[in-house]
Image (cartoon, rainbow, N blue to C red; front, top):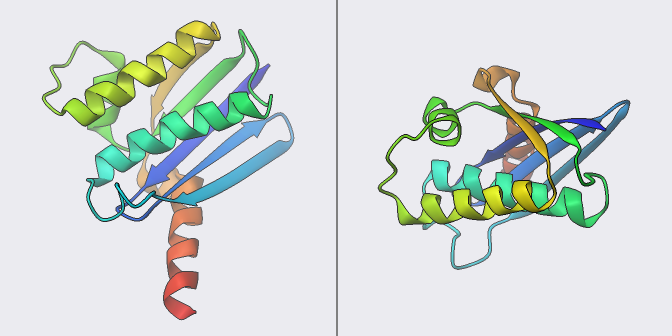
Length: 136
């Protein structure tokens, strides 16, 4: 099966969208306390990718050997995941390791694509949740 995966994150929350055929699954979560307001936006996006993939596999939406196009709105993240770019951030190195393990264990066929932030629907979910929180 083929999926399209969008993700986003900030210092407080993460969000992801998995599109499979005509079905769209949208999720968002608040960071656990050890991460809330203590990590960078890039680190948060890696958490979103890791947790979103894990969630998709856990609910059997993503199955072994499925194809996933992961759409990224950060060039540095795209470069880190698609090349042997040196990474000094241990947190990001560990997330990449966990993400790679999931991909390898499930024999997923992954393709990364760089997109504009304005074309990232997961950002819209995150922004909408932020706005709702501020208005409550």
